[in-house]
Length: 143
Length: 143
DNA sequence: CGCAGAATATGATAAAAATCACATTTCGGA
DNA sequence: TCCGAAATGTGATTTTTATCATATTCTGCG
Image 1 (cartoon, rainbow over the protein chains, first blue to last red):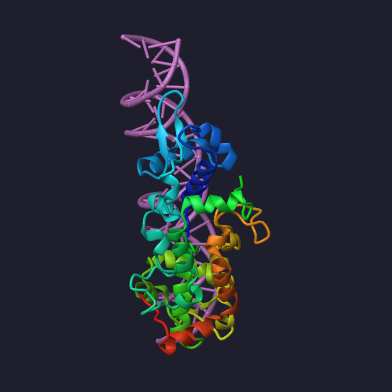
Image 2: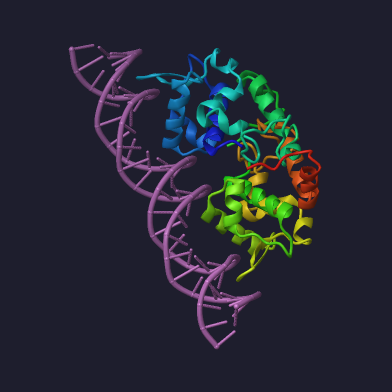
């Protein structure tokens, strides 16, 4: 469903959204152990996120990565699309190309609305909204 | 969610269930192009399925793979567990170990009951039931 | 200006998943 | 009883994903 990389990226984005802003940046080495992602792999992922405008960064001393107000208004789907591409998440359960609700593959009904429900949520939920849940204790952001 | 291998295996099992029985077997080379799976990779998958009792086989001339009456009464989950192992399907969206509905990770609610719904269906639907849908035209089994 | 601290770029290595190739075993039939 | 047809067993190769390492560029600050 989601690649490992996408999971890593989501964790990182949520961590940044919770702990950083324009005036309070963090470096990869401050983050990786908190979210349990290998350091240099995380670095690569964050570069990709940064290049695609999902997170922000600045170089040099006092630099680092952070989530701007603009960043956290992005829907979660953007994170996974940047990392996994657009296809992976939406591909049918049997990887049939012509599979949709009109012409369902044999497993289509078993998944039911499960997958589309998840995708819909990823599309409609912003990073900001999600960390709201964490802040209010509705869910946990784990290591 | 499901590995490529598991998808291949499901396709193969469903194909066998539709087109074979004790008296009417098929060889890998008769199947692979129909379900669009590389021949020798399919061979390996089918050996695994056969060894684990998901499908049946007999050697020698007039031999081949087939789905017995006993086979098609198995729930679909058995197919994916044999190929992907038991963990993969049930692992949390962020791969957090201590994530459940009591202690949900940040993404838990986004997936909602989607995943458990799918798993439940895999557990409760037998191969036979599923091909019923295909036979009655409710769904398609594609190449 | 220039140095040091940071991200960025590039590419090498390792591990896992997918694919291929072939030798071995089993079995039915002539 | 022997030959050939088929699955089975084993392992090598390729591709993708994940991981590591290092050189390069940018930037704030003294």
